[in-house]
Length: 112
Image (cartoon, rainbow, N blue to C red; front, side):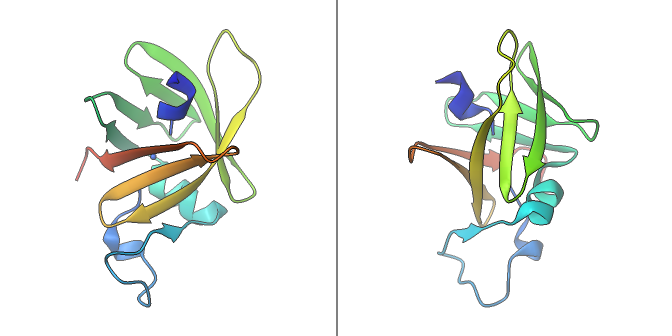
């Protein structure tokens, strides 16, 4: 479950103009990098995740790694060494991470 919460969001200024405020917009690789780098996301329940530019991600006291592969956000958390990847979508200040089996985690920028 923690893996699901390890994900992110993009500001409204970066949305395509054709998208309405009520549509989730899927991000491509460069958009995911822009959406997450040096950002902080808070999830339901109040957990916060920070995405540092060096590829470190912080979730409470835990330190993991994050990167973008193709058009997916990927993270790994010790003691595991495998990467788990998610599609990323935005709608307004909200982000959602969609796992390979359709699991969804929603967060909101904490640094706006």
